[in-house]
Every structure is written in structure tokens, then in C-alpha cells.
Image (cartoon, one colour):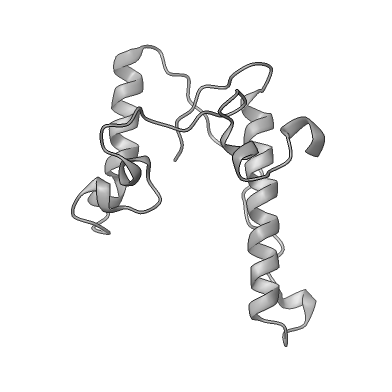
Length: 122
């Protein structure tokens, strides 16, 4: 799950397409490196479903409930005892931090790690 608000001219579908393309490429590259002896046809070709499911946040209460649900998923699944222990969640980095990572603005997380802009990829 992810909770974000698009900034500037980015649409939800552009952002999701960029994430899927980038992560699928990395997964396929690493899989190929670790399984160099396997025929190319045996490597995974599809990583993501074609569709994604979005939900409009009606108000701050709805947003906060969604954020809490996402944050506590690893705890509910028994993967960690506290949300802050889940390495891949926003709670891990800093419990008092504002929820989320900026996308598409001056503090664009993609830009910080060298991911091409969405419009360049589509």
C-alpha cells in the first residue's frame, strides 16, 4: 500500500506507471544476475498486475485511517511487533516524521535516487 498526494502536473497513473516500470526492471535485472545459468525464458516476465486500485481520500479523518491501516499492516500480519520495526515503512525512518515521501516537487524522492522523471519514461 502507498498513500500519496500527486504534486504539480503528475497524475496518479503516471506515478504508478513509473514505480512499476522502475521496480520491475530492477527485479528482472537482479533475478537475471542471480540466475545467470537459467534460460532467459524461465525468468519472470510480469511483476505487477496491469491494474492498480486507488481510493480518493474524502477528508483528513479518512486519510488518517488509511495511514494508520498501512502503517500497522506489518504488525497485523505478525511480521514485526511495532510499526517502527518494519524496515520498508515510513514509520521505520522516524516515528515523529510527517507521513509519506514527497513526489514530483522540489523534494522529489525519485530525483534523489536518480530515477528519470515520469514524463521522460512514458
